[in-house]
Image (cartoon, rainbow, N blue to C red; front, side, top):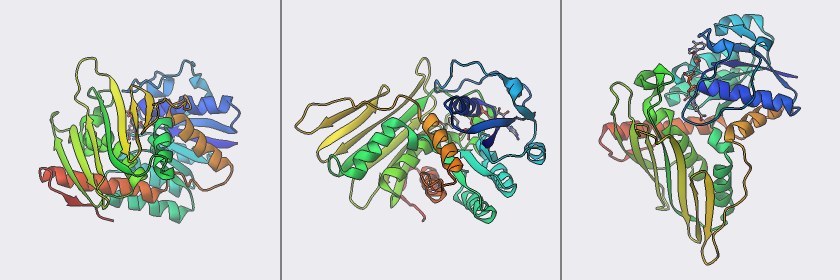
Length: 341
Ligand SMILES: NC(=O)c1ccc[n+]([C@@H]2O[C@H](COP(=O)([O-])OP(=O)(O)OC[C@H]3O[C@@H](n4cnc5c(N)ncnc54)[C@H](O)[C@@H]3O)[C@@H](O)[C@H]2O)c1
């Protein structure tokens, strides 16, 4: 039985909890035995709503968990195999390292950390402890993005000629840290990093980036971002984020990728494929959100005592290197900046 504790029971922590409980019910031999949050209210169960509808219909009996206000106390008292860290971003590095040093496998939410140097410390701590660290880049498990990855890798429609990615929402207000630039990193690190990671996953590291970005909310960092990624083969790649969209906008993520012989797009929750010279179609994809497949993979891989190879930490560190180049480019009004390797 894989014993897991959840650290941080806000919007994403609660989403993870619901998915683990579903996996338990489905017969995966795991158990969430403990939960930890500095906020006593979160330990009693009320869910936090975020910008994506992740709510499950199941009521959760919170009396079944042992509850902790601090990570230290939990690590002292619990016998665990793994932790799932869904804390504010500025805490990812320190808490991941503490848990790895305590001999636990770690799933830590994205973004891995604010800087590549922080990521390096996390990777080294995992190596030194002989434990596994995986970053929750959920889009790498999201069916619409998995479909795209296969099309790119298999060359189903030839080579990619252009790609654009977008995510946007109203301003997140459920966690005050999200709008403090030194804690959340702005929309650039918090939201846009999803698409930066997808660009890296699909196409590898770009040579240079040019990022135009704007701060709108005082102190939050860059709230609106548009980045061009330059590759040796000349494909035209862009990703944008905006978390200042008002009114009833809600949340949206989409992509449009053009190949030599067709295009694949994801809009309004559905994937549309238009092969050149043949009728377009909507592929039938698995119905669940990426969180479910991500956590299933994490738990089942640990249970099978296999390496968590689907999301190598060196690759998620590279995504943060790209973000660093984007941040630098934005501070130079969009000048092209080389991505460090
Ligand atoms: N994968 C995704 O799609 C996705 C979506 C949203 C958020 N996230 C990421 O998940 C992380 C958490 O975001 P969120 O929206 O859930 O934030 P949140 O503010 O809703 O939740 C954070 C929780 O951590 C708790 N906390 C804060 N400091 C603590 C401490 N020292 N010890 C114990 N608990 C503490 C807070 O009380 C809160 O319950 C962030 O890194 C964010 O970028 C990922």
